Length: 131
Length: 129
Image (cartoon, rainbow over all chains, first blue to last red; front, side):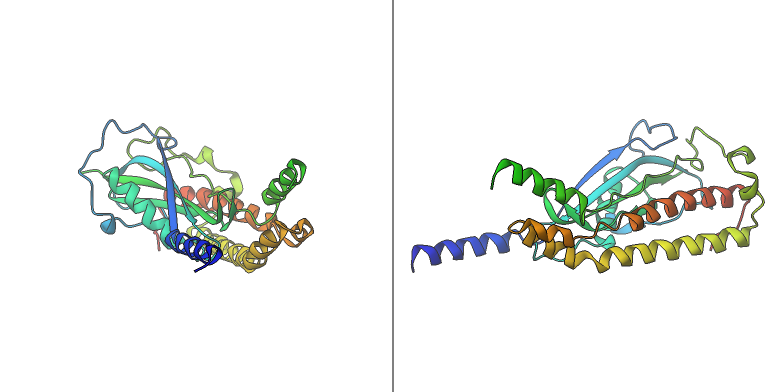
């Protein structure tokens, strides 16, 4: 195998290994509400946390934090990030806060970022129901 | 590539096909720890006069606006990506990128209006769904 072929093979393997997406997140105190003193509950299973695009009006709740996540694809060959992937990341962060749900979920638009060929930002408010 | 050309490429990356950030979340007015309770003074006279069915209808329209704007952005996604790749070698290709700024602004405006309508729906005790 020539050096060029070997280099191409290694580059290809590295490229494939980097396939997929990565995510980053930020959690801020809930806008317009008192910041929670401490996580009220143990971490929940992220899969059990609903992500809603609306507010909750039929149950009392308190806000735990405003979560912003960004899902980025690693290479130009990967699929663009989707709102469903953003929801998954919102669930994970909400679970870390001990939340029961994420409300008011909203999404930006997919496009090129400084460090990614495709990224999608989303945000939502983590809430816990009052007893 | 010279520094000047690199700077040009970076500047063009900023103006074409970039990701739009998520619209900001509204202040918490419904949680038990919110600092502000919604009153009639929070709404314009025209908004305050809206019925629950009118609020729901406008909300549906806003959802349609968001869907259409997202579809418009997605329609240009592949060509933007291709133009950006080619643009690394042939900067003229950046002219082919489409920023969809009007669509991105429409999405943000629709979410902002939706937040007002949601507050109004809660204030008027409209049934959700």
